[in-house]
Image (cartoon, rainbow, N blue to C red; front, side):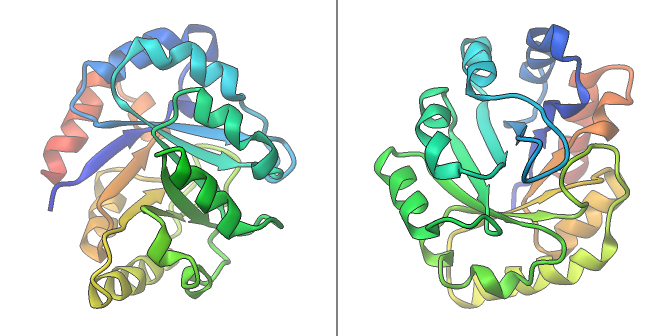
Length: 218
């Protein structure tokens, strides 16, 4: 199984984001991860659809957009038009989940559902046959640089078993505290996409660091 690396731009400089995108573009990473936060669903505030749109022409990498926001339905079209390839929203929002999935499918955008650490994976079951991706949060969403929550490994493993037993084609993505060691644990549990942010940006060369992470798992 090939492991996909999705560098999160959250650790980069927002004042020079095109350079960050350019560095990731030179790496072996297949995705670029956008953590969209509204200061309401999570306590941090990042950026909106225009920010993503402004970067779309800078690379052909897959834009892996993670909406940590309320009012997904209201803003969904804006993120679709911005050039997102995959849009993942949280199960914990108080909205019509099936309606959001349907809108994404009609727009030919891959659809994902994310769950916070305290949310049981079983709550995804009613929607799991209609989505393309699941993000397991291994930190509390909101800020980068947090410590990996190893108690989420069981959730990854159980979800992986459920997907395999039901012969579903769904990517299992892990977001939060990923490095070589924790990433290996996630892959062994069944994850096939790893989001890495703070760990990569601590290295001297972002492109090289992302490529080394890819090589380590492939």
